[in-house]
Structure formats: C-alpha cells, structure tokens
Length: 415
Figure (cartoon, rainbow, N blue to C red):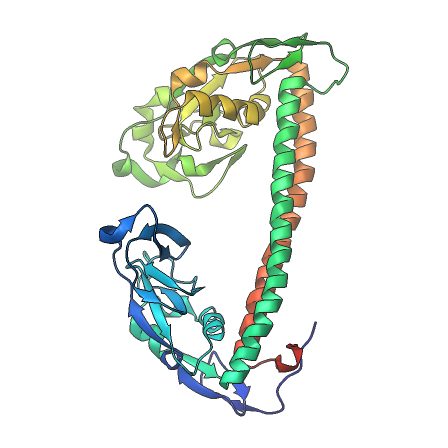
C-alpha cells in the first residue's frame, strides 16, 4: 500500500530528518515530554500492588507508585531502545526514565516518535549502553500540529496492529514447526521408521513401546568414556591461535556456533585426558542441560569447559545419538534427574545412566539419513518464516518513521 505525500516540504536542517512538511516545525523532544528518573524499587516491592516496569514490561509489584497518568518510558541503561507507552499508576526501575506528556502533545504519537530515536548515536557506553536525560530531551524531532499527531497515532495504531498480527501468525507457525521437528526426531529415534515393526514394552514410562528387535541399555553400555571437560580457570592460557576450547554458548542442538576461543597448546597438552576427538558428543551440563553436538573432524583434539564428553563405541553412530540426546525423550529424562531450580544441572553419573535405544548400526545410519532430510525441510520452512518476520518488522519500523517525520500523509487514511 502506498500513501500520498504532503503538498509542500521544507528542509528541516536536521540530517536524520531531511525534508519535512512545510507547516511542521523542528523541536526538541522535551517539547513533547518532561523526562524524569526512575527509582530503585526494592524498598516498596511486594507480592502485588502497582506494577514495577522495566524495559521488558512488568517484572514486580510495589506498595507505592511514582506516577499516575499517561507516560512514555525510556531506557536509561542496558536496554535503551525499547520505549514503552503506559497509563495509570506505576513505578519504574532506576534504569528507566518515565515522562509526563505535555498538554499539547499526543501520548501515542510521542511513543511512536520515541521509537525513531537513533539510540546507537547517543549511547554513551558500548559495554552497557546508556542514555542521558539531556540527549533524549534535546533530540531534534519533527513536530506536527496536535490534531495531526492524533491522526498519525491513530493510523499507526491500526496499521502496526495489523503487522503485529502477521508477525504473531509467523511466530505461531515457527512454534508449530519446531514442535513438529521435535516430534519427528523423537519418534524416529525411539520407534524407528517401520510402522509395521513388532513392538515391545521398554520398561521405561517415558519411552513406552520400542521396536522388538532393538536392544536397550544405559549410555554406559555404548560408550568408551563419559567425562567432564576442563573445570578450572583458563583465562591465563587464552591465545589468539592454538587449541579450540568450547563453551556452553557454542553448543546448540546438533550444531557448534559462535566465536570459539583458543588456549595455548601446552595448557591443552597438560590436560590431554580431556582432549575431544572427532565424532565425540559434547553435552551441556548447566543451563540448557542435555543439549548436544557432535565434534566435526576439523575440531579433532579440541577442549571444552565443564561440559560432558562422550566417546561412543564402534557400533554406535554419533549423529544418531546426538539426535537422541536432543530429543524430547532425553530432555524429559534430564529434567527429571537433574537438579537446580533456576537452571537444570546434570552430571557424569546422570548422563551415564541415560536409558538409550540400541538399534543395529545400519539402522541407526538409515534413521540419521531420514532425519537429516526431514529436519532440513522443516528448518527451511522455519528460516522462511523468520525471514518473513524480519521483513514485517522492517516494514513496521519504516512505516512509523515515514509517518512521524512527514514523509507520507496519512491523515486521509484515518476513518
């Protein structure tokens, strides 16, 4: 959908605004709002009451409130690029600014205006992004008349709601595809691919029936070793080049991702018993407990921090058991046997005792080929949906920017 432009424009004199409608004016953001500091909430926190707001929305409740009314909240430190529009009584944390909307400004228009602030330009700290009240208050914006502000806000409320619905639809699709992917994997690694195969009771409640010709046992039965990786500080041994050392942040289900650190070869040699071989399984021990990847050939001899290393025997396919450890079946086991409330932890004994299916080796490989093909199809659909979300988010941002800077005239589009 295309929208008309205003009849005449003038140079705003502000680089990021460019031209703006002839009858609009340039003003500092403080013409719209009076920005105030948030405050630490610990002394007023309680089980219920007034909402305590941070950049992610409500995360606690308070016995008192800082303000009662319409407000645009702006990040002061940390997450600074996610303004919020709120009404009613609330408390904001000390890493957020709250604001009083000026009488001659529309609160909703001000919120949309805040979404276009170039936060990266103003941020005062790259390690922990920060915004000063002065930078926000003095940021130059285009100012239409109050009736136009209200019309633009009404238009954006309607149009962004449509886009948000489309984004939510794509997110639901991704959730369904992710669930289907997990179901396909779990079924294949516990039931096999032959729907007519005779079945038997596995004796494990969360496994149910399994193919009659498969064997079952603990992970110990099919492994040569299950050990924990390096469990000591190694910052002194970091090197620009050397032996790769994996962290839990590098491990995703079936994948090794992200920046990989290296340690001095002498440091790694002194811990040769922790050396990881091509085809070994690396399993996250804390946090995303149980998430597993296979070590590729190019990482032969690498090390890892406090994760679990499994070397399988020659009758076991690493990729098959990687799929199995990442399956819902295994994740159920880890959640039941692991410990910890905030995050699940697992140990060498827990991993060793994991009940595993033991199909014939050739059947393991057939299942791996099947899953490689099927998960690739699903992953392509997920990638397509994620790409759709990115495009919708870009359209949303572009529409807001065009409307609040006067690049398009949406007054006629408001019923």
